[in-house]
Length: 214
Image (cartoon, rainbow, N blue to C red; front, side, top):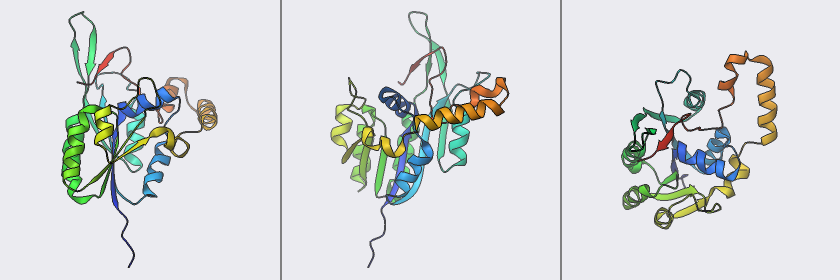
């Protein structure tokens, strides 16, 4: 009798994944990423988490969010909060840890394998809790940078640690394709709209602000 494919759910910490890929010098192709894990089992859900600066006239992350939402991802967003620190610097706070943790615990009873795209050590307790429910957990980040992008405690807690460098040939965007697409789009897009056409592979931090996770 055939063994049924394992049920998989992806949990992508958008800002963390962007920073990791950027530190390694490549862009994520989210269509290829989805296809890669669809080939590894039954992909029940692919969650993508990001904070959004809602009061900006133009949000550079919005085109990416819209694209993901229409192409197989479950996008979870919330508005950032602004504050002024003790030095008078304006900062933006946008932590999605609670939203990700709640979704992971809710779906844990229906999956066999959780794939967490984040190196944030705050997720160690979540990984442990999901494992207690019988779910295997893979953490995707990198130790190929100095310092490593993954917290040691999170890496040790995971059942499997997958360095994103190993995934790069399968989920990275071809730099030549990106340049060709940008040139093609610029010929057909009014100049004032061109900024929004180049962000599908990016998760930029809010412009002109410091960004805090906690």
